[in-house]
Length: 577
Image (cartoon, rainbow, N blue to C red; front, top):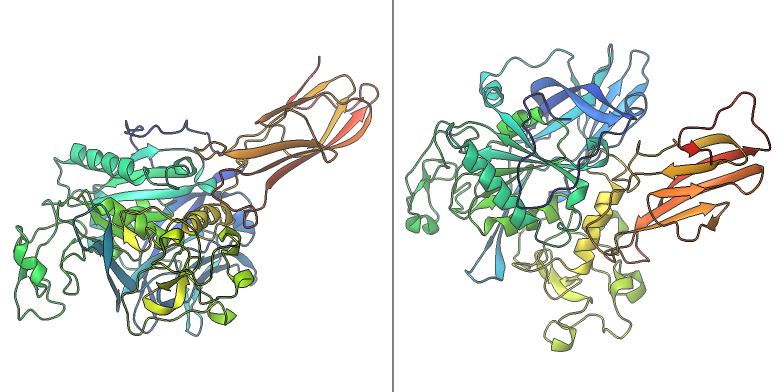
């Protein structure tokens, strides 16, 4: 749910799906939105808090949710936020996976396809957000595995003028509203380096970014699974800091850059005053464009239901970064970096290139306690490879990347995850290996499975293709007199593909011929008890049938009377002939 300052839907290059009203079971919930700081030792400190309203499933505050977000970068442990009532009962649980790593991945050439120049470095200080329902008399406890327990006081941290300032002038624009945040992936694009007179430019840049971003498969087909909002925050000056080259520049000095790439920067030496302190040459890497993620996360409270954040910097210089938030410039090639980065931050995919990073934690699918990401493995036994259903029986394993016969197939290609030997990837080429490429079958499948399985925020269990609250009549028992026709409706969340969803209506387990849409009209043939069910699953082909997500189902138990029942009327959704 967007705040009252939300603007109307903007004209986009893309055709946005029709807006859907929030399901009746989803209600705005008073919540605490807390920015937490984590130091190198794992100590947790709340630094800023705001009371917000979130759209959560109505049962969540009284139950236990497990909204796990973030990725496995560097093997960071999950942090559990638990709301405990006065009697010691757990009222809510959120699992957060913050990342203390900073990633920079850039094209090494100017062609349409380019190998990736990768940088992967740890940060001493990182920030993340905890969002929990506000329950009177309850305590909020943060637990880090192997670390101390941190209790967050009910009173917010001391006021921070610095963080309050970035929220004072923000304007929220609803770019795409496809449904309730309780059943969508919510993307927030935050503007940085835009002055008070550049609001129109910000909107144009957002439109250009989205048009390019959603031109790629599978993002294009599942755009309707997202809500998209843009947050405009005023800066005093436009752009980002461009530290000038200096060979003797010391690490951590923000006024200079030791990377020789900065010599050719036409904006070298330009330092500006912006809302989120965007700067190039972070950690001495010219293209590594970063922001103060603490400020960004505080500003993002204006759209508190966000699941992932992209910061768009008003600067034409090529650059960006990945971490707790993704950062990109307005350079035309930065979009492919964002597509690749979402492969990390949302789909939890590994890099497939071979640039070594000493000290980076290893993985193994042979040793199950250290399993690898979905798109890499050290397993070579055919029937144990996690993407084996995608591999043709005649494809040799391992598969030679030099043999042109296997250039367009899924196999087992050696070299991935910062190692040239001993670990394998599904395809010879993929966007997780080279910029300008498409996602391979395994990587695009993981994006779709992640949408349906959840674990990245709310909804905790993933997006349900049968939109909760859109069923009529509500699932459950129904009573009706013989001679009436029952009408069942559901609201479906469909991919923009052909085919999209496979829909089956069943009466007592038997499919109803010709019933494959949102509506079923059915006249019970005789008195008695009947079981009506709808089963829906993804039929796009992006999910291998052996690896697909389970079908979404709704069920109704129908009792049909021989005469008019003295205490019951024909239910909502049923109509007499």
